[in-house]
Image 1 (tube, rainbow, N blue to C red):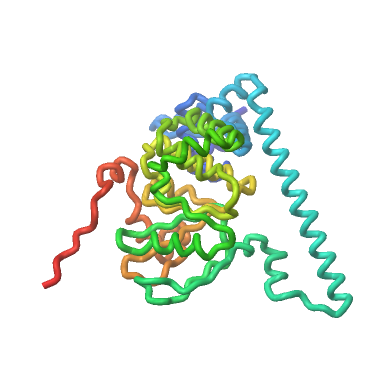
Image 2: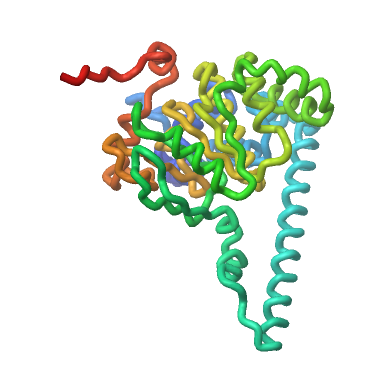
Amino acid sequence: MRCSTPLLSASEAAKQLGVSIKALRLYEQRGLVTPERTAAGYRNYGPDEMLRAAEIVALRALGLSLPQVEQVLKGDPQSLEPALAAHEAALEAGIRQLVDTITKVKALRADLARGQAPADGELVRLLNPSAEFSTAFDLPWPWGGERFELREVRPLNYIIGPLGSGKTRLALCLAENLPNAAFLGLDRIKDENTAARLEADAALTSRVDQTLAWLIDEGAAESEALTALLVGLEAEGPAVLVVDLVEQGLDQATQEALIINLRQRAKVGARPLFLMTRSSAILDLAAIGPDESIILCPANHSPPMLVAPYPGTPGYEAVATCLASPEVRARTEGMIAYRPQAA
């Protein structure tokens, strides 16, 4: 009988499933899962609801949009085909990377047999491939030449700070110093060459159209700003991409759909991204995962610092203070900080 099995609260269920409470609420709003309610109105998740929610989480991890998840759960398996094909491709890429690593290990062992020690940094890159994108450089004004080091680049990296903190300068420095990196600025939105690029590159157009359709299924609104961003994200070439104010011109629903998509890209080995943002929809501190990092540019022009996404850790409150909802960001767009005139 179900009464013999402990029921989980929404927070307990979310923690066990590895998703946010917000995600569970979204599944419920779409009618995908229906938790029980206590007399006081609190949600409870039993074994059946947890199994159903786990299926949804698994389908989402494969890259399915919520409408596609709904179709699969209703018994239509066709939506699974492209997702499984993409997952198979990601697994094959992982196998190729593993084979490449084994080859490097064998080469190192052969060198050792000949009395040749590994080159500087070779063992670090072998054991931690993300160290390939590490960088160190002297910070420009307003930091006055202080040294900044980033020893590990995660798939998703957020750059945040208050107005005048130097976060744009840091972003530009990262684009200049990280191996094969590019900077995607705000001029992307009014770039007159965007349409020409799409017309000239059928493969890029296909990727943009596919991602745009996925985002629209998730509730995003098609716009010039979104298309311009997707052209930058889907373009081939750079190994690392630094994006200026990723939320620029996007409403809340679009931002929420976008960050879901970017997190799914990160799980299948897409190139690392650095996202400048001040939006709580993009940088949801309650949803930060192990593949993500936060870089804060403090207001007092102390060197940029990595911030752990836990209340009470150094820099956490400063990050939270910088964030605003998409509605507030839209109302304050174009405003500048007040600076008193010198006497």
